[in-house]
Image (cartoon, rainbow over all chains, first blue to last red; front, side, top):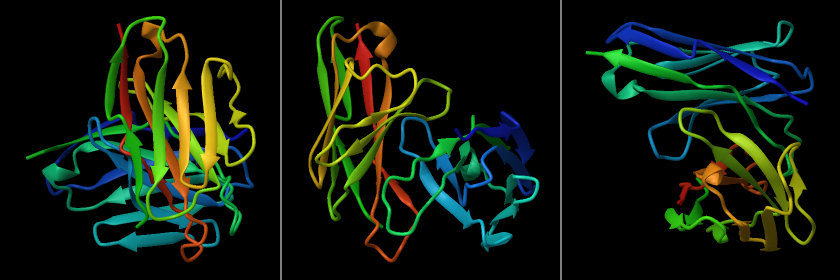
Length: 116
Length: 118
């Protein structure tokens, strides 16, 4: 089955600096790669996602890049703010259009602390 | 986006008893729902895939007789933790995709249920 590894496990940055989290996956058939932000005791919230037919996607201060050949994808947060402090998870799945049974495999998570 | 609810949000039970957790899709039909378990400071681990009208598919290492899943309607899946023990204490989260909503890939997560077994 799919295996997703995520690094680093913890990341401390100064407010205003950038944060980068990297993930690798094992199954070349995976085609959907979401990133989630989870605050303590809450549900994971989707912050950005990318499909395998796209190499990069950006949404304001957040961007994701995908390298299918190397089977890795990264999350980039620019101009970090204290409210960006949370645990971030990457995930991968094989999503077929119209099919609901596409399970997500999560990375181990990165605890991000943005220091004011 | 689509909304998924869970009930209860937190439950405390005694060792040896059973606990039922409900997962509902409020504004869409979900033929498939997923159940995850998350221990403190760890990632989400998929336990099983719940299929409406058929048996659930369990991940390797998850005891199907201990974690009973019933997906009796297109909007409701239940997870029953039978004969709960302290090591079952965890955060249980469900999710589902709305495959009819513009071909979105997004999975919608419930708010989670904090189970504490004493």
